[in-house]
Image (tube, rainbow, N blue to C red; front, side):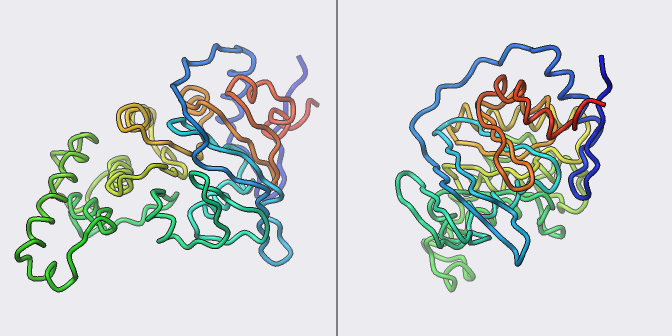
Length: 293
């Protein structure tokens, strides 16, 4: 069998462990995990293009996400995956194309408006309040649900106090779900990285999203932490009915938990389909592994 060399273009290096995993998955041709019941299209991205000066981050990207599915976005480093999520949740405004959420098309939405519509997001880099407790960090995800005015919230009197109690009760359920009860009053900065990732997920869940965007939720984790996070993502999808869109570099995770996968390379879509279809797509294999030498 001819040897395979990794592509070495600047900004697009593929971690060796990822390449090895893709080779293993491709050669083994493992059967797909049973798919979950999915519904109609909830999120539709059509012909999105995004440029920064002369640099084209995304070029004519189209794909959709069905309700209650787990939709993965994969690709080598610098492929445009995070830029695509940033377009969906209003961080970036694409120069071309449109995004529809439950049939409503929008071209210029900011992050707050997208969050109000029911889309929550986690980021690659943790942006938690390190000096605040786990409980208080997750409580910040309830801000969109708070109806009392700021004055009543500060005094914690009347309806504001009762409302806060209801929100805290909701957050306590999330803490139980994520199995971090023992750390609920611990400052987040004192927690291990894997637990901080759970808190970040909990804050997004506190928004009660219809669509949850996860940007590399398992980056930097060991095997045990990845297994736990996979379980939580599947439970969020199964028990809460939340639609999940995730960026992930671990091919084992992607192939195991995803219903469909879209593949980007240098800002272009090169593959879209079930894990089995993507796994055997020659363009995808070439993008990750280069060509045979």
